[in-house]
Image (cartoon, rainbow, N blue to C red; front, side):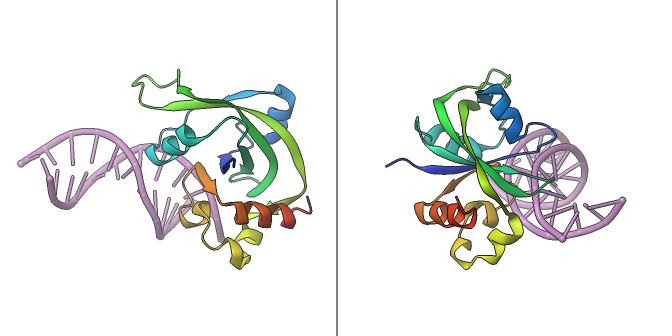
Length: 136
DNA sequence: GCCAACGTTGGC
DNA sequence: GCCAACGTTGGC
């Protein structure tokens, strides 16, 4: 079974709408070992929650892994990797950070536990819970 | 703008 | 190898 993930992006820098417009993008620039491990664990077809940090602070859409991890060309040290993602759909209703914090079934979520992590795993149960909250 | 939580760097 | 200092992220 496919795994699920959550990726963060500042909408100022790259929003879900940008992804929809582009149709496909290289998800690079991750410079954190824990996040990089998650990128490496992604399989083609894995679905991702796309979260807007700082502005919005909400999950706005779903994306999918189109290409598994490869060396991040923007990293001179060659230690980090990137993946390619494509948009799947915008959620009917965004799910805010406050909503997620208030939902006891999401208490163990990695992104809530470690707020600075830009790529984090999402369990099947957490995934279903969030989609339900999004009325999706 | 501030601060907490981390990660990284560099002196020893 | 330890740890203090510093930088970055992201919520508030």
